[in-house]
Length: 75
Image (tube, rainbow, N blue to C red; front, top):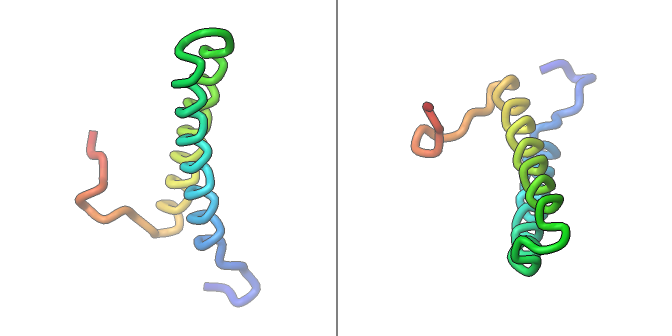
């Protein structure tokens, strides 16, 4: 690795953990709304957070960091 480049893997992993916490919080909010006012918007929020986590995972994969085989989705 180039000495001038910053190792962003730890930051990327930490951000994915933070996003995962946000997803869990949004799911609690969705349960409280019980498909009432704002339920659709919260569901979309959860979807977008899941997408963000996925793209950060793809970023890690592009840098050579892959999930252990037992966690990989081969679909």
